[in-house]
Image 1 (cartoon, rainbow, N blue to C red):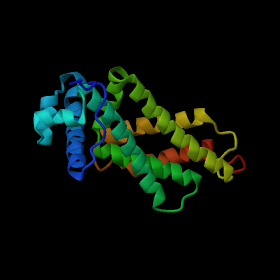
Image 2 (tube, rainbow, N blue to C red):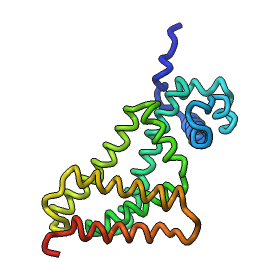
Image 3 (cartoon, rainbow, N blue to C red):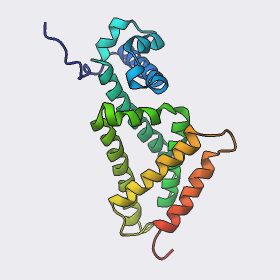
Image 4 (cartoon, helix red, strand yellow):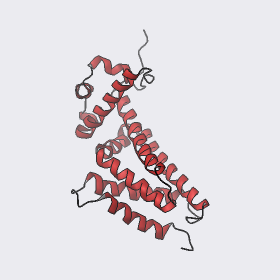
Length: 208
């Protein structure tokens, strides 16, 4: 019988039970990699945290590297969904959209502080996933900027560099106000408003 490539995870489970088990493993891996780092983490510890039999792990993931790679993508998708849900809740102009997207990211990062360690480690464990995470995030920001410019709500000369600059600001605000939060006095809303002020003066319409 041919062995499964350990670097490739099996196809997504077809049953609801299988999807729940896979979700348990990803959630356990988030804690395991977040607390211990990739090299100290183990499949045995992940399955213990998930309450899943060790042998069942390979039904869903080919190796420790495979679940780590899928976890990076899962966290990236979580960030996307958090922003999308926030933006879908109400009608916003372009600047308010960026403020709401940042606030959603800060809230997500507060709930999933492990994301910073995991994404940072992926630069060395799986460079392709690391790069893809940031490229896709920048693409989403650029899409919003172009839509805002087309609506006359933002400057007309915005390009990819502006998207990466905004992403960089958001990443470090998340580090300070989510991961390194000192408590209730560090309100994510304050950080989002400060960023909104910078954006309104930097990318707002030229006649503002």
